[in-house]
Structure formats: C-alpha cells, structure tokens
Image (cartoon, rainbow, N blue to C red; front, side):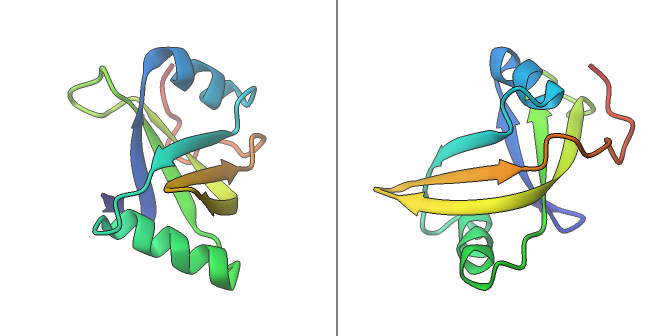
Length: 97
C-alpha cells in the first residue's frame, strides 16, 4: 500500500524496534511483481529519485504505531527487494514506540 506518497510495509516487533532506533535501517521483502509498491520501488531504483517508506508495527491493528523515513537505496536481487533508509531522520508523525 502507498499512503501519502510513502510506501507502506508492516514489521514484526523484534525488527520494528531495531528499525525504528536506526540499528537496522533496511528491510528485505519478497517481490510480488503485481504489487504497486514494488513497481514504484523498481522505478525509484532506476531513476534514483527516492521517496519515503512507512514502517508499521504489525501487531498494531489500528496501524497507529509507525515511522516514516527517506529511502536512500533500493536493490533487487533474486526475487527480493532490499529497501534502505536514512536512520537519522526524525519521525514526521511523532510516531510512538
């Protein structure tokens, strides 16, 4: 899903904590070629005109626990996509956690 021009992914709590703190400033995803997120990410990788990524805590049914970061790199390999982001950017939403 793409929300407010940010590409949205869910993350398990053990990864979310590291991603939010900046210790782990990337995510690996299996590519679904029909998913609009990967189509947009592929375009970003070619043009190097990177947008934002929104990471949501998977256990939060209301999806109110999240953070947004600037994407710094997109890499596709063997049916997977690695999305890297700037770990030092402040939360735009004042995200909880």
